[in-house]
Length: 207
Image (cartoon, rainbow, N blue to C red; front, side, top):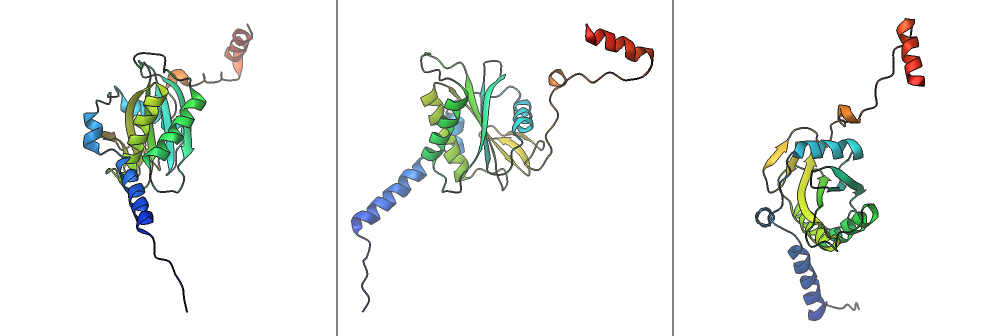
């Protein structure tokens, strides 16, 4: 004889409530667009800079904090755990990363810095529920850290796309090599060797 237990109605209700809460912790593209998220002046420059610094692979998320002039102030990358997409969990992870890299701005009446999120994933550029959970998590993490909620960007084989804005490009993408930093950030080339010119350069460098 085999004995078993059927799930109680209370347990079934609890499971369905948990599922409903998880689904509620995401934002649709239309909700995101209506939230007044500030537009990036030069999204490709932001994406290229983060791609070069962190070299993301699929399942890598990069959260970055920009100042009013869109200069990068701090950034952190991490790998998404293989678990169901949940905006609350994403919020906690993003908040933990932000606390590690930059002080909060909760004492300010109005946020002066903006957090953006770039997520490298498989698939195409179309919105997914996972994207919606990241959007929910980013918005909530920014509120709790005193930051302005900025763009959510996906990076796939097709390229990059700022969701909710319709702006994107083919490069960089999840398989492309990182682009070199801007010339102003690159170290100066070493002087050529040989001949009198080399001796002059050596003396100038020694001063």
